[in-house]
Image (tube, rainbow, N blue to C red):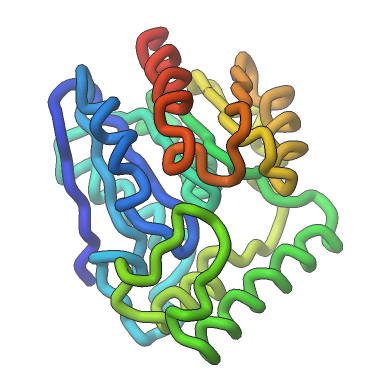
Length: 243
């Protein structure tokens, strides 16, 4: 399976991972800023953007996503990287930091959360993921609505996105939340002022990850890199300069 990735610039690597139903396109303004002094590496998750979108549901999982991320780091010759993840991409970045800490130089978690400790919270999340999949099954790419980072035209297949919703977006336990205190990588948590769904989770991560910084982007919703790039890049650059 072919996974699209692209590197821009030179210097320490920053791996940018988009959220569910978005693509590497959402980081256009971020790459421009990061590539001054760093190597910005974007990629498209399986079923998204310019990556393959296989029909087999079993191809989509958190484990295969982490393998793709590690494969990209190997491909660009990076022993470690700053992991910048938005939404689902932030959750995957947390997963990678817990599973392979030597590969993670730092974390930038953007409008994301650490999952759920309660079964009911997880059930509600999984019901939402199943709803996304049903909309894509029934309406195709026209089923994509909402946040500013979503663009139907960048995707090959609604079926690939539906499989990703069922296989990657879905959560089965609370191990990420339970592992936050063990993360040793310097961490920046960014959230849009109006992203109600992720405000509490962002604040929680900032108290549980040792030494984590929390930055709120005024006026922003769920996708500050898209809607408020200047403000987002300023916060990001300050963090990268501190490493």
